[in-house]
Image (cartoon, rainbow over all chains, first blue to last red):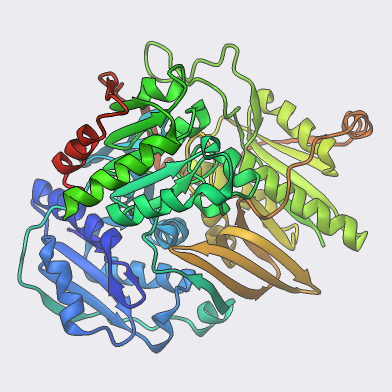
Length: 325
Length: 245
């Protein structure tokens, strides 16, 4: 019996989702006294890159090398995950709740005949041989406790919910013996990647600077972007702002947008409607800047500034820059 | 082209979520249930294809007890041709997927679509499981779908960007914003919905994979500490404490 973690690659590199999943899986494996394996699947991934997963408690890597795995092909990855779980003799699998993690987990769980519990926020316990774990539900408005009845269980870990737990180990690499079916590659063909920006991904970002209608117009976002850049933060926006196309839809955080859980969330000129709060309330620290003292967001905030964004934000930017120097 | 659209009945996005004393159930009093917003994008896109091609039908399916009939009627009012309700309280995503797959198995749908997730359980599980159970390709987080003959071009969101994929029907998709605009049913649609078929189907046997034990509210914030707008240095101090700068 063992635990398998999916060390997802992004552009051939291990990134935060892989490290967070490994942190979770390593703590879980240790609590259950089980060996831990990580799956790395890609094409000609450098040994040094693979071994970086050892920084987060992984000692054994199953490496699957295939020329067609530079792109993410969901059914192929589901098959590779199942093969890895079998080779590792796994009982539990841990995956990041990233776009790809969420896309592949359902098929993997069906192929592996496993229970799937997605969006877990805390370490799972095992009671009478069954895994019990808490997960986010109702778009952040609730927390659900779920019991697994499966002989095997797959967890996807909500981004930023568990955090990174450095625990350096030396890594040994074993290759995964598996031949994916050609038809699994052919079902859907990737034609192009439309944009792959170098900007910080919103779900992974440690700090998010978000703004709403209080900014009065898209032309005023320069200062928001500058503050975000200075803080190494991702930018986000409220739904009304995305609806009128002041900002792109993929920046929309909230119940029907992206749900995030950064370390620090700075909300500027956002009133804090219940749908918005649902998407951001898992943030560890919330700082609200709004000129309306009655804005509901202050009730959900850790720190609040009642003031005009057009005065406060430039001052804040200046102070942050001064502190950084 | 025939489409099957999977619909979940969820509390309206403005709902203040509370649970009963046991934590087992959502307090449903005063809560308005709606079509899961992401499922509605899928429904409208399927209707657009039907209208453009002037052929085929759009069937909506939901797994639930009689209380979900109202959202199925709403889907009929928006324009779906038929509704199917699998008569069972949904136990978990796998249970729902098993029901949908069992219904769809022998019906040759060209397109099976739902939302990328439901706004109550946020699992992103059902559509991918349906695809797996039926042995069909699956694309989640789909923001655009074009169909030419039997070839579908799909745009999906990925980490840090978007990807355009091509594949042949039949396909299973999870839709999100961008796929279509929501529609408000008109009076004619609402009248027509009353006479469209809503078939109730018995559930198939399915294994229990997971069990919901209880719900809690997320921990409340300790309260807001106000900082004077003239004293942004305080904010800098907070950011330093949190290791941001």
